[in-house]
Image: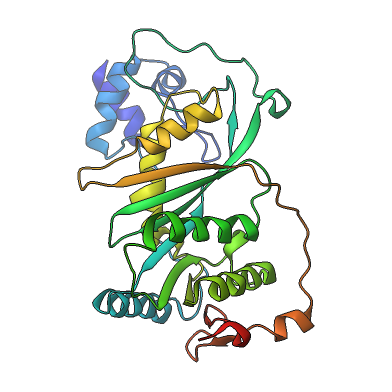
Length: 308
């Protein structure tokens, strides 16, 4: 039996057409007409076959100056740290439905949670968007959970709350702030509203705000992605988020072996969508672009009327 199966497998690549989808051992055994699935699996191993997944190694189209931008962010971060100036990473986590909805993953528990068979957004208490602000120097983070639109106003409001509640006392001599953000989304390098709201923040805090955006394909190296947001996802895996209070509790309970501390607050402010910022208003901003990757790097200073 083994010799017959071995000859059949060796004669052709699994004996099936190339366009056939995933080949199960039972299907292969049936097509061969001999042997069982266990025998086929044992015979495939010496032929070099095994269960595999796609390997991400090919580099697709990326920003032409990705390496230069990454080095610039690394260099500026080191300079800010040496001079005692704050640096933060910002990003919005995927929106979550609050209610009895299935939450991916499994966990150890005595009894499984009972949830809805269908996830209809209309049945949710609300759709919440956690927006994170992570300070790598202090290993602290503030997560502002917005219950309305995830706009640039929510992003800047989160940075403002981080500064007022966590960092203003920690950095009393701060004159500059470095923000590392994705190139897309509500805090991307294109939204005019993001730049205008940062101008208001710079005016109110008297800080020179430097914003560096990760180039295309480089957002995965943003510290907030693997030091905060992934830890939150790991903390509440398999737990249905029945209410906003439960969501906030899981975020506050997120920690790591290196002592991560997270503060979560609820933001029920209604942020309007579709706010347009005119070209004339953009011209009044006190901002300057860097020579290297000017579309991804700019510094916003306090407005001239409010500068000291």
